[in-house]
Length: 197
Length: 197
DNA sequence: CAGGGCACCATACATCCGTATTACATACAC
DNA sequence: GTGTATGTAATACGGATGTATGGTGCCCTG
Image (tube, rainbow over all chains, first blue to last red; front, side):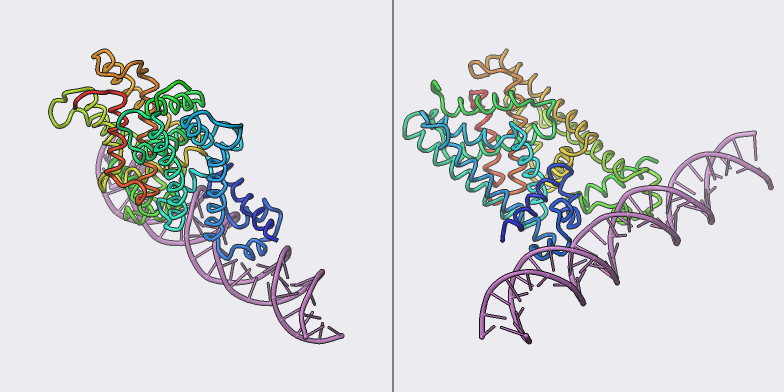
């Protein structure tokens, strides 16, 4: 079944999180998943295809978890709280999300060079920005937004801030501890959507 | 002379910008700089050392240009304009800065894995945040800042936003064109430092 | 002029990589 | 029962990589 394929992609993610995307090889993935090289080749014709499939799999997982974040934990009072949950879900605030973020960053960095990977990144960011833009527009309708707020621009800035905080948390953990990152995000949202909660 | 060493590091940067940090090899660098493998080894004992030296060289160049940005172009009216010049200097808004940003991102992504590279990144971000924090503090003293602005937090958020915009411009150019990135940065600064210019 | 250090080069070696090929099982079709 | 598809494995091959080694010209000092 396809769970064999997924185990291979999970192994790739694991290796990438621990040692970086450059240390990923067919042999390493095969060993980590405890299968032969031939089996890896059976599911992924080429290494580039394997990396692309893993990236698609991870991007899907990220977007599902982030978007689903607003549903969990009962009802939400304000649009701001809704947005806050989504973006905080994307930051490396615990071990599993740290793994995910490290791999996300590795794939994103490679997307600068690889067109197929860039396509996945484009789709991921488009969904995130789209969701945020709708949320900001809704907040504007509800009168929760700051004067003159443009939903699309606010969405682009918020998405960029999330990834910037993620980048700095991962590459300079001493300079930007988790608390500061969350505080920066909260201050940003407070500026865009003033109000109590 | 040491210009030989610098030519090697420049070649490494060039290769990284065009094909990514994984395609950097001693042979490729030697060929790009039109020297022998042995010469590369003479200046850099190991490949990791070569990459680290290139990263240190680039980080220095980036910080000098960004900090120096406020001096160029005559006097500056406001603190906001001063900050704006520095951060816009860091975005990939033309070819040379696009090259620089691509390489910066490649090094930053590797800093997640490599401690020596992370140290350089920490130093780079500390200088940037330090400068921004002093600027925000100065703006606060001058009464140009929004109510309740905390210089350190504003600096961390601004630095993160710059790198987030950089990341999205490079990995999803279709989703975040240069104009939108500049607009997002301007809107961010307007929120922190309201006022005419 | 003798000699030593510096900058540079060519080559060799072991290792790892991506991929292709071949073979071996099991299961299901006819 | 024979044949065919599917999943898994073992191995081979050409190429690239990091590094070590030995050698060559050249300048400078004595």
